[in-house]
Image (cartoon, rainbow, N blue to C red; front, side, top):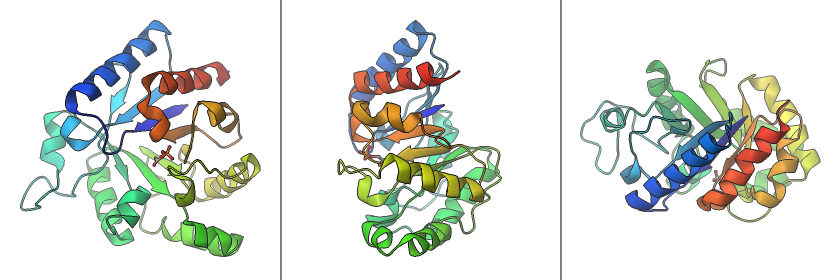
Amino acid sequence: MIIAANLKTNFTRSKTQAYITEIENFLIKKANTQKVLVFPVASSLIKHTGKLTIGAQNAHPAFNGAFTGEIAQEQLDEFEIKTILIGHSERRHIFGETQEEIVKKFNYYKDLLYKIVYCVGEPLDKREAGHDKMMSYISKQYEGIDTSYKKLIIAYEPVWAIGTGLTPTLKDIEFIHKELKEKSLAPLLYGGSIKVTNAKEVLELKNVDGILVGSAALYAKHFCTMIQFAQDLEK
Ligand code: PGA
């Protein structure tokens, strides 16, 4: 399975290094074979060769240039980063990234054969508007995305569940994952308030190929426990 940590805007470079070392040591010690991805803040990116993979939370679709405040391919190349998170709801909603801009990023990094974790998910008002309206909202987030791209991983993250402690019911997660699998056969992660206390039951669900974890992943021990759940569940 794929177990990913989105560290968002947390940790300094040295704390990130200590975090990565702790996770890496855990994976080695336990001979853990899960695919583990860690997305640190841009200023804490490091070159890492080991069991876990470091990815970028965002990057501009260009090699370099006049894009104040951004990082781009050249800065990722420095650390041999080949994995990127695109379309996270905080990028969409706090920073106003449009689907068009997101598609540009997707295509740029797809052409470079990056592994892309692509996030989709509905805000609360869309969920409350009923199933069809919710699905049509999510469908728009698939527009322009090559859903058969070999290095694509999709993360379904209901916006209202991110950082709130709220989650859909297990039945709801299973139901929506089944529908999303009809749009793409790419591995499908669930994200939104995953913690040690609910990770196992979510990982057990059909059509859940892993989890994307924010707040709870900041505790290396908790994140390792979740990675171990995935290992134990794998046949
Ligand atoms: P959360 O964040 O686990 O804190 O809800 C998940 C995410 O934003 O990817």
